[in-house]
Image (cartoon, rainbow, N blue to C red):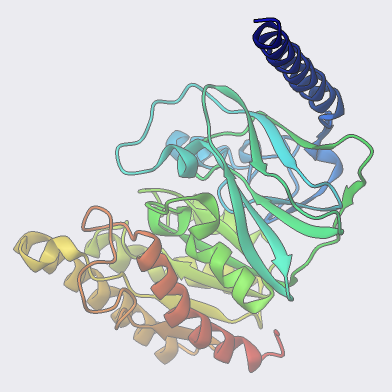
Length: 371
């Protein structure tokens, strides 16, 4: 009987000790958890800007262009194509950011519209590392954790379809974080439609101008103006004011065939007047998958591409030099699976666009020693 009591007592003591040790270890682990320190992202280099603006995350200072339509001014406050670049040896990268209360889009993921997209350079190439998922107008999210402590080059793409009000980068307390110098060469502007803007990529870094930058090392600036890249005179003046080594006009999906006929030549001539030698590359509209069954859509795209080709031919005949035309052939592949809604590319579509456009654009740019 005494032996049984002693055994029970011993088991109870061991259980109490075990629980005590677990509690101590848990408290120790919590005490050892690294604190996150946040840094204002305005101290880091901002890739993708076409023109310096007083509002950091706006693409254009639209006050300079009072005759731009109000919708275009609003769209140019979106941070599409912009990315903060920095170096850190932190094992964790987090972010705090605020956007607007704009309603959710019905053909964009929340991450693409209002979230963040982190790339880290590995073996000399930019590689996807994680996303910042928006949870409210202001969000806080751990993008990547449990990394080794080596210094890494990081590029954090900003929301495609919202105005970024503020951004802070979070790293482990005691780690280093400094601005990275501009990792890209030259300056190529892409003026275009919602497809350039980034609809319907799954995350910000998958818009095709961003893919082109990562693939080529060239500095592509995203001037996508969703649904509103219609080659107005005011837009032509804005584009012509931008200092760039080359211009890509991928705006054909937005204007009507008649607007293309009336505006395309003047738009190109306005840019050429301020940039005598810079190559200007026109891109036909991608084939809309909706047009496989909707004959009105099919006919509209056909007419748009006919009109931009005719305008290109007239420009060449008039003596305008250093202009080029890229056709829509195979930009989305031929399996009909590369769009989200029959119009806007999904990630597969954007990847294919970059794979098709990249070699054609760089071949042209190489002729001008833009490489």
